[in-house]
Image 1 (cartoon, rainbow, N blue to C red):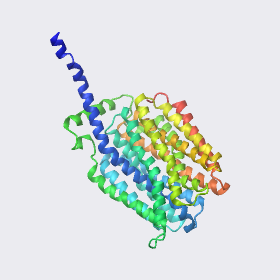
Image 2 (cartoon, rainbow, N blue to C red):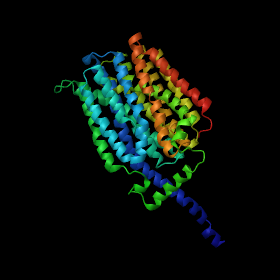
Image 3 (cartoon, rainbow, N blue to C red):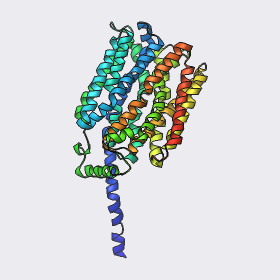
Image 4 (cartoon, rainbow, N blue to C red):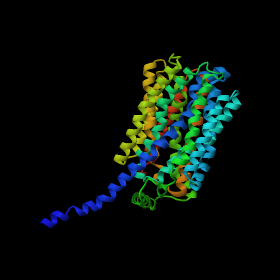
Length: 439
């Protein structure tokens, strides 16, 4: 009996040892990579959507119409669409470190150049180039994370990473309002020009830092022990041997799941682009003129959306359920956008409805991105993730242009909000009807 008591726990220890090591390793990896990647995405998002705050003064200074603004805000996504898949395929060949550094430096420079546009044509070109240079960043990071984390961990990891653009909504509004209020009358530039100059510079510095900070893959991480590197490698090898996964580039283009995911993502992004580019203008419709107050109020939906995003990712990983998490989130988003349009004349109710839409939209993102990686690997993952993101992000062109055109035609934001709400409901139906086998 004494021997049994002494040796009994050993098998359990042998079984638990690798699992404990793997858990500790993934905590270490997450702490090393996610904060820096989230910082890059936060800067990218601020540089992408700060035009929504610059618009409050820029349109009057340059005599641009709402339709010109809507087209310029959305044309970013045309450049993004055209160059995203090539950028992600290049990342697989030359590595994430150089690719992400190049992207951040070029988008930062272009964002700063936005301060000097004077005509609609220059505005369109600058926004198009911003999309070209940022293309590949988001899907590149999603692909980069597949080099480190297996699929069962990705909803929560994606959620942690994607909180950056939600946080950008939280801090971006007040920061833009503070810059535009504080820099009014400083030097020979208008406050909207200072906004682009001040917010573009950190992206350039962060891109340079990426060259020195990011390792390419686990085997290149000097801060991992050999045992930790091997544990990660084994976990990923087991997953990538899954016979149901596709690994060729051709498989990506003929796989109907890729195109289904692209359609769903198009609908989700239409909502995100709407609240990102139009929230300041919608809030100004409430009768608020102070740029700082507009910035502070525009952060409220994103604060609530950030909490929803974190909860959605972690709860989805814990339960292993993806389909209903995504469908319910898009349903909530559609309801929120519809109610925002209905109650535009009631500022408190409209802000609550706008917050509800942000909760749904942001909660959908981390769960959605666990879907493509569930059936793609290798080159197909590199191209497939980029294809889904680039096609889906065409909604970033469609939604702002639609909102601007309808606002110019009708004098109200309501019709545009109803149209984008319908796209969220479409996403709900696509997920419920077609997404059954993907887990």
